[in-house]
Length: 200
Image (tube, rainbow, N blue to C red; front, side, top):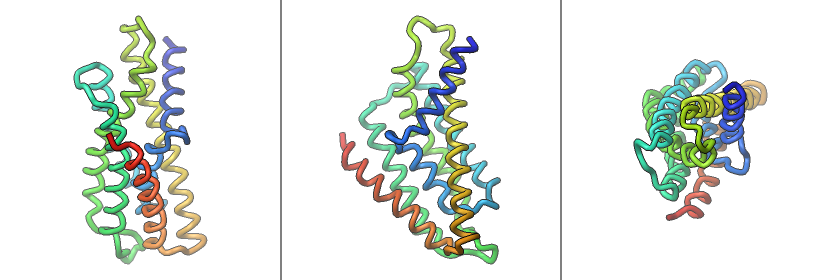
């Protein structure tokens, strides 16, 4: 049981950190684009909301409670990146006195939760193809370990983004609005390519 848990923990981490399938990485990056390092508590809440969303649909899909069309899910995932990037640029235009964005940040948590539901269905398509055959009793272990691995991968991405943000904003003195436009705009362009490639 220990080896199964370890294997699926690594599988979950490797799946979200896989640069060849970078759509999940890109979503986490654009989700964090409007935050500074000192706002790590807000980012932690944001990632928690995203985790709640993808954990729910991941479990429901793997347990066959809901059925999802893989092609449509893969199409919807880059759309979540496009929507988040547009929201970042349109809504977060002015910094407050603390040098951070304050406008409508509460909506970010709802977006993270809702878009997490979509990403969870994407995770489930991968996990279902990786489950051990004839090991029904270990399904909960595999599901839990995979989810923890995904969460660990997310936190590693968040840490990298916030550290890079600190370098750009605090050391190199790039304006936060310009940094937001650069990160969100780059994510938008990459996500648009994915959308066009994945049209069902």
